Length: 171
Image (cartoon, rainbow, N blue to C red; front, side, top):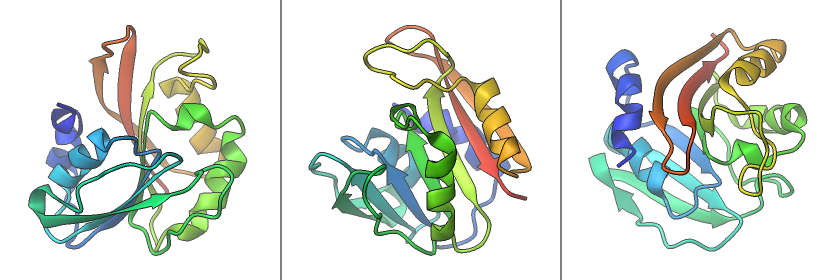
């Protein structure tokens, strides 16, 4: 269902072989599967969620997935040498976003790449306690020294409003 959400990314960005990504706040793995569909064969995804999840260990393109139960905000995460971090509908659970981003930056191998999916709103509700519109995402990452903050796709949310997918890099 969400695989097409990332198609624009695959069309414009050639991933080198064997990527290693983390999916923070993976839930049941909906966006983990979408990421697996665009990564090169034999890549790896470390799926992390606060609640125990049953996620398939092998996905499209022969992408290996390992699940780790952890609180992405409170815990030291078992990630290192990453090519990217996916946060799909999870960054809106982080109150203090700048320190959170800085905490994760050492986990990257070299280039820092974030794939963010969020609701394009600043109106909080019980499901989106700390929202982050695309414009505020751009402002936040630019202030943190990132050079590229690109909206790669949008789609209507089945809960109302619009969702966006953005690629953020430091080059």
